[in-house]
Image (cartoon, rainbow, N blue to C red; front, side):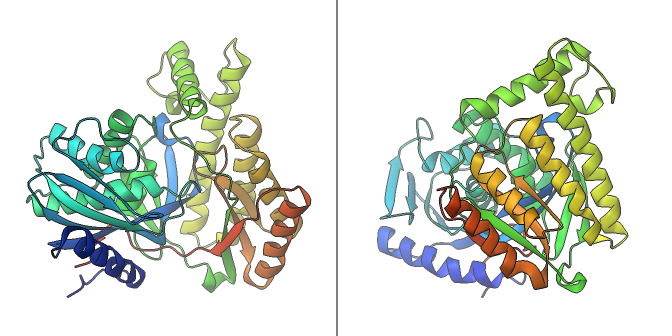
Length: 382
């Protein structure tokens, strides 16, 4: 029987993962677990600066069919399908590193787990900045915790999954993606303080306000493990060091350094935290249409101060705003990936067409555009 909180779409994906498990391993899995991708409404690059974020889970999932085994066996349905087998958790790379790394991080964190067979199936868009890697990590994490009898607080689990990505995979990400995948609730956007992972779930019923959130996958892949993302984090750490604070969240609002590049990075973090707090306050009052200007200001800051946007993202945001969007911004780490646009529902098709036309005129990839809804976080499917 499906779990009571299982998302219907996750159930559909689980059937594919289960069938792949049977085909590859010739047996039935002990269970099926799902974890979603995410959109960050606002609060970009603030997570590793101990700041504030506001993500919501997307109805796209990585599903893991899992059973205990004698050795580590990882299978993915992605593309033509591939299987990785290893006697230990050492030296696993590629897509399987997210699974092996999460098992390694659990062991390192005092939650011992042993070998498993895993078949994963995911429809979280790969390379779109929607946390496809975190979805893999969180699906296998809750599976391993269940199979090996560990009760792990979800906030702590997010830190463990982050450890896998930081220390095993080698991507210097913050804790936003894993927290969103594990902690978000259906129909809500999550306001979270990344210092202590305290959080509030705010109702996010766009339809009731006559609004729609478009997610624009620019089809320009982004890569978290590249040097630019790490360089931004290093800039923030250096700025904090020069100011004598542990993280830029604690920097004085109008602090100045001798290095203009560091000043720009710091300005983004400080103003982005303010935008998150203002967005949370508006949502608490049910004034969702009024957050549009904050979304647009966030993109401007990311484009010019943090310098993590791209031609494709700027095209999507500019076209959406030009066609009447209430607000638009890139979402995720940047350097490609996806943008979001808050629009009046009646204008959604017109704005989609404008974004697509702008990409064509600039000879950019044709974007994939879909309507977002706030979905359920990670859960056992069956």
